[in-house]
Image 1: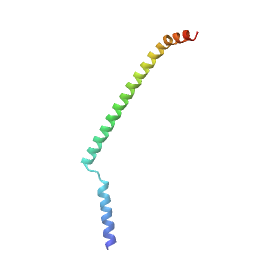
Image 2 (image 1 turned 90 degrees about the horizontal axis):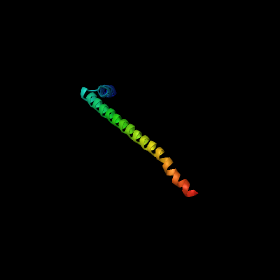
Image 3 (image 1 turned 60 degrees about the vertical axis):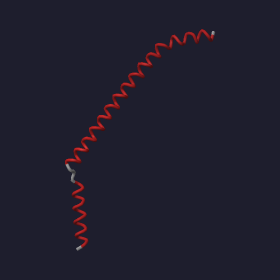
Image 4 (image 1 turned 180 degrees about the vertical axis):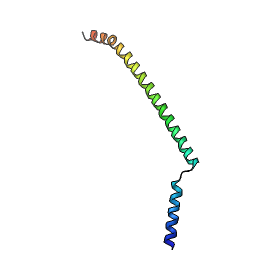
Length: 76
């Protein structure tokens, strides 16, 4: 009899833990929203950093001929 009662209590406890409450769902949704917003901000920061790096690289490429000329003259 004790085994049957124990198994019934175990089954009941599993069924209660499997059900999600409205409050738990709301908290999970809020956490998901926070994660999504953080990902969007991180993507935006990465895109901005990439754009700035590209602009700096283009600027450096434009400067390269000006810096190469004196070095070549010094070698002569």
